[in-house]
Image (tube, rainbow, N blue to C red; front, top):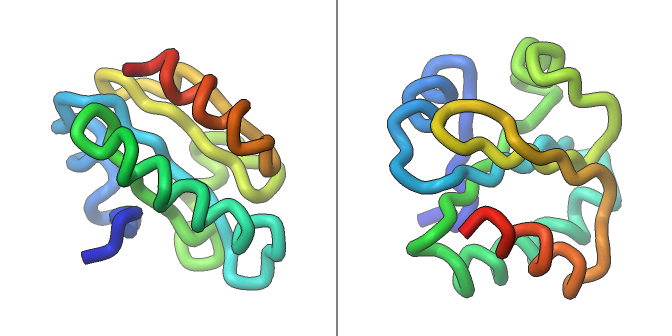
Length: 107
């Protein structure tokens, strides 16, 4: 199974609203080189924090409306959702230690 659950217009609200744990959503695209370097870090974070945080991804080329809805202006962008609402935004590819620190705040 994919460590980063693919989200689309049909399942996005259900996954985000029904989650008991915070959801980290990676907005990405196939053509985005920084997105490709972010994915292994997120998979590692999923292994480290998987029971406490949920990880998902949205391909902005396929789900443009979701990117517009959440005002994603650059790629990659991570949005952290708690209780169905975005509470944190991480744009670009931060260093690994910085990403861990930011995500740990939501545990």
